[in-house]
Image (cartoon, rainbow, N blue to C red; front, top):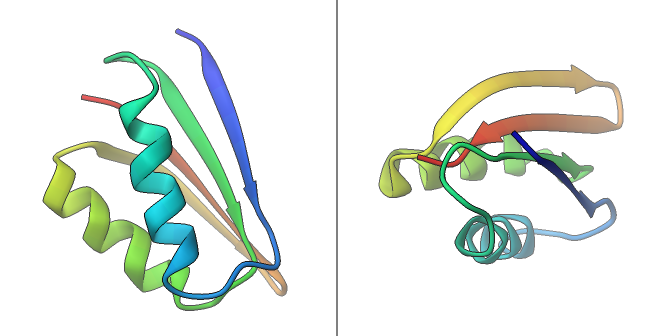
Length: 74
């Protein structure tokens, strides 16, 4: 299953969620999207987006200045 990395470092709310939504429309079911964000609000926005889209949040890694989401397209 292919993996796409989306570098959203430096973008502020709501851009990380909007760009993640757009990227999810471009990948096939079963593919994974890795989203790298520096905006702390993405920790709330991305999981809420995935509840709307039905895609799966496989993993979230939080570091002091970075949040990395691993998403599987349903």
